[in-house]
Image (cartoon, rainbow, N blue to C red; front, side, top):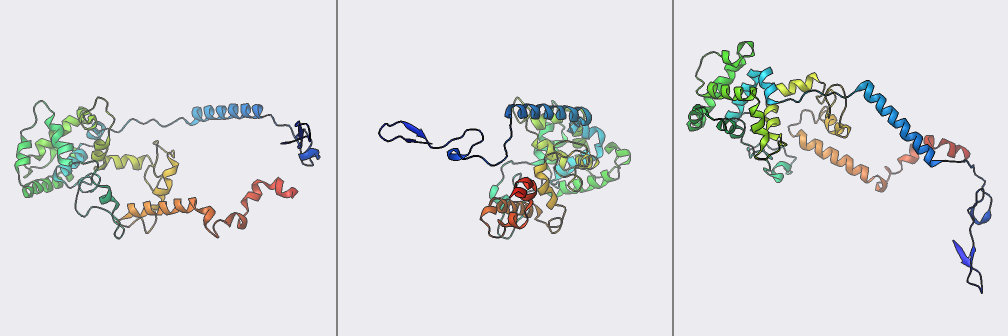
Length: 324
């Protein structure tokens, strides 16, 4: 800042910022030390680079192969066929999930009058029988003729076939659906056998992820299909990725991933959320309240006084407060 010298219009300095002085030329009584910002930045970048390279060389990053419908069909064919049967009969988890996949009555989770699922609506319509089984089989050069038998049967008859075949699959020896005891299963053995062969060849993955586009980037249906079985859940347990082990993760193995999701996973492990039938909406509401409290900390009496009541900042700036 400066002032004008009377009668001349020339500026006269009113403040001095010379080394070792304060405002208006008064001597600076505080401590003074040289600080080279460029040197500090260079040292910091080099140190961090060395640490990153060393950590990458020592710990590496888990790189397990992608889980696919093919790997599922090869590893656990009975679980694959059982899940396909549930998709056909409309008894799988996805079939009864409700919005955003379907309009299953009574499937939504509510909190009093609040029904966020219904408000969102069906945004990703999924018909498990058509999308996961019938549709893919119809892409074959020679679709199985048993599809017509299934689609023309009554809902009661389909439910009877599905129930009987599911119970028989649970008793199949050697994890082999082809060894199921004979029974009244209708067209289900033929339909699921063709779908199993399609999955083992890898073509089912392509059909469910294509979405009619050139690039295969939408894995929603494939993941939903696998999620209805036990294979994917078993892999998550073995890799310590369940909520009561590590929680939501980006990588596989004993490595934490997306840490910002830990809070959601945490609430699912404790009561009353753990056993609540509407746990999803309760957890979302709880995290929303905590986030709002964090945003409003400067405006909440009592809460904003915590730094003075719990003076952790004095430990961080202990040199400054010691001089005071």
